[in-house]
Length: 288
Image (cartoon, rainbow, N blue to C red):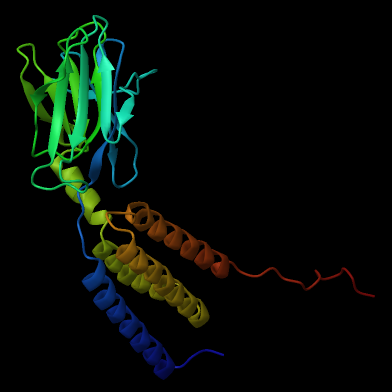
């Protein structure tokens, strides 16, 4: 039994209402464009070079940066085979020494207690030959330290790492700031594209486009309804993810979801478009 024009108009109207609901709820609540890169996850020294690992928010792999001039310049690199990092020596404090006994320490100082206040400090300290610790840098604008690396063969070179920056010591003893997250990031056009794909607005647009595509491509009314409900259900899941998964999580969903949906629809369309096999025996066979 085939649905008449009136029934199809009703179904189309319901579909438009559903699409409108998706646009209103999804577009208003999950429209965001996060920075594609999250921060530095690891730092260390290996084979004559300092290394930092920058992790993207959108989960497409890590970025390793290397520096052979003490951290003054950085470039893309492969993963080092082994990485020596300063061990933790306290709460938010790291320390390591060069081969000649010169040591460095990166630590957070909270004179008024945790969390950070206006008097809290980021301290990079140096000690020569077992003497007292001397403060060499206080990068007050930095995020919290997460690690330290020291060149064992050259006690003048050390790198302190925060969630975003590398603080490097030049030969004169001055500490300089390098934004390794920016250096490790993709070019701005790629970042804008990734941020858009990872946004809630994109999943809203995809839901509307998939709804229209499924309504046009699927042959039966039942299949059209199932497709619309499936799209609505997936969009609801992404809507919840946009509310509770702060900072990201929709990049791969917004790529895999439409690809799988289109593939399934094309398979269904192809399967229903094939002519059925005849079960009538050929003439002259199976007859008395």
